[in-house]
Image (cartoon, rainbow, N blue to C red):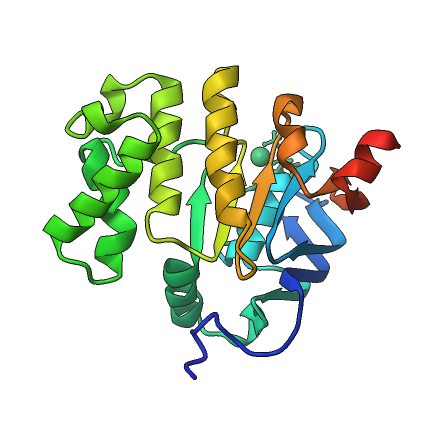
Length: 245
Ligand SMILES: Nc1ncnc2c1ncn2[C@@H]1O[C@H](COP(=O)(O)OP(=O)(O)OP(=O)(O)O)[C@@H](O)[C@H]1O
Ligand SMILES: [Mg+2]
C-alpha cells in the first residue's frame, strides 16, 4: 500500500488526531500562541464543529490539520498517517487526494469561470478537462448553480461564491472535508442546504467533515462539538451534551 493512500487498515475510529500541538507566530519579543498544546480528535462518519471567539485559533487548527502550516511541537495524524513523518511533497500529494477545503475567504481564482474553478481538484488528479468539467457541472447543479457555469466569481453574490467553494471542496469526493465558516455569507435556507451536502458527505464510515463556525443556526448538524478559547480546546463533547450543558 502506498504511504499516500488514505485507506490504511486498522480500527482507529478517528480520522484526525491532534496531539499536544503548539503553534506560535512571531510577534516582536513575545510570540503569539495560536495553539497551546491542543489535543483534538474528529471521528470517521461524523461532522465535527469547532466553535469559539475570534482569534482563539480555529483557522490555525484547520491549517495544521491540512499540513499547510507547520507546527512547533506535538503531532498530527490524518487517517492514521503522521503528517510530521512525511516530506512536504508527500503532504501536498496526500492533501490533494484526500482533503477538500472551504476557506474562510473563498479563494476562488478570479480569471477562471465557475465550472473551471470547481474542476481544479480533478485536473490536479489527472482527469481530462472535458470529464472534469462534466463532473464539476453536476456538483454545481446540485447546489443550484447549474445556470452559472460560465460566470466568473466576481459576477456572483457572496453566497453564490461560497456555493462554488463548497462544490470545489466536494467534487473529488475527498475523505476529509475541512470548512472554515462555510455559511458566513449564506442566507438561512442556502446555509441549511450547504450543511445538508456536508452532512451527507460525513455520513460514510470512512469520511470526516470538520466545520469551524460562529453560526448557531447550523449547530444542529454537528455530531461532535469542540470549543476553543485562547489557543486551547476547553470543551469537547457530543452535540447533544453540548446543547444540554
Ligand atoms: N500568519 C499569522 N501571523 C501572525 N499571527 C497570526 C497569523 N495567523 C494567525 N495569527 C494569530 O493567531 C491567533 C489565532 O488566529 P486564527 O486565525 O487561528 O483565529 P480564528 O479563531 O480563526 O479567528 P476568526 O474567528 O476571527 O477567524 C490570533 O491571535 C492571530 O492574530
Ligand atoms: Mg478564522
